Amino acid sequence: VVLAQEGVGGSIGLGNAFMLTPRNHSFFRAWYDEYRQFSDAVWNGFSVRLPSLLATRMPGSVRALGYSACFWPPWNAWGVAQLYRSSRCLVPGAYAVHLWETKVWASL
Image 1 (cartoon, rainbow, N blue to C red):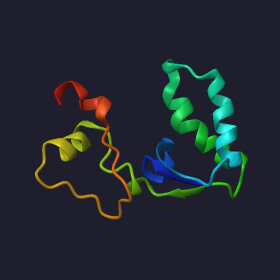
Image 2 (cartoon, one colour; image 1 turned 90 degrees about the vertical axis):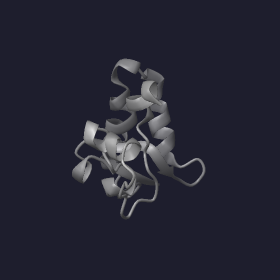
Image 3 (cartoon, rainbow, N blue to C red; image 1 turned 60 degrees about the vertical axis):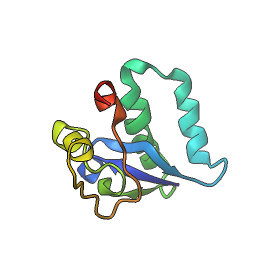
Image 4 (tube, helix red, strand yellow; image 1 turned 120 degrees about the vertical axis):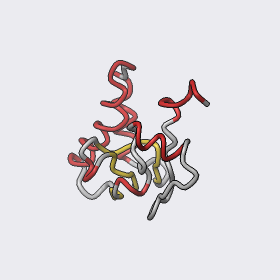
């Protein structure tokens, strides 16, 4: 399983915006089982913090890429401006780019 860290050094967790996995991997079954208790009030707990916790409980099951592999630029005002208001957004070493659309949806 490959996930990308959200926050420098995974300080926020392992994000679910970028996931590579073999079919029916036990890590994703464990994660999915936890979603039975999902609450929108703590979506970040299920979508970012929980996979980080599960990765520590299931050593060797996840390869965690650095945050710049998918979550750069960050979702703060500066990062969103880089994505949507800059003519030149630098994403060195990125495999994918999270667009943070919920932060800018109203202005798109």
